[in-house]
Amino acid sequence: MSTDYIPRADGPFLEWARNFYNYALAHYSQWQTPSPQALLEAPLAAYAAAWDKCQSPNRGKIDVLEKDETRKVLEKACRTYYRAYIDGNPQIPDTDRDNLGVPIPDATRTPSTPPTTFPMADKIDTSVLRQITIHFRDNGSNHKAKPKGAHGCEVRWGLLDAPPASVEDLTHSDFDTNSPVTLAFDESQRGKAVYFCLRWEGNTGLKGPYGEIDRAIVP
Image (cartoon, rainbow, N blue to C red):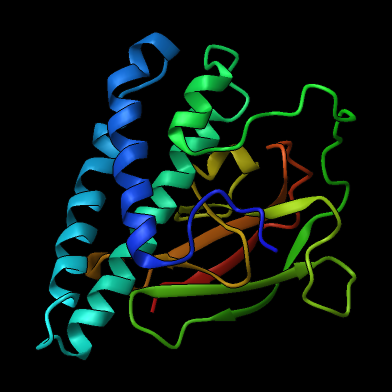
């Protein structure tokens, strides 16, 4: 059984996301966190509109595709806000976490440790215009399963004219719980070099070491 705090079904997910956004908007100042408005308001409105279209008996494939795509964007935004400002924040009491619909930390659990291995880019797919899709697996592994304790993979990346001197030069970050992760670009960025590297993030937010810095060209 999945222990994910985000509902799988689309309807319950919309209800959860609305509650998550509205509750965070009402309490963020008490938690000493940024407002969720900039990150979540537009994706929530887009998904709600797409969901409403799909309730019509005259819905088409395009409506369903729009619903699925806007859900991905909203879910990613919710996870980003949760990881950055909710998970591990001592200013947020358990009652607020329960009202948000997110996990309540187990005060008696054994302290966790960060992942010790790093993911490698198993395949870099540039077959779709303005997209780079990175398939990843644990370094040295012959299977695609994440290592024990890893929740997902963080991708640090940047559009640079020359190879970066360090990971700190890669100023963008994306995250996915399962392989692959897809980076999207604008038309004006086609032909530019993208440098990126990967690392595992544990179930409690602790991060492992970065792997090698790879390079791809935006198609």
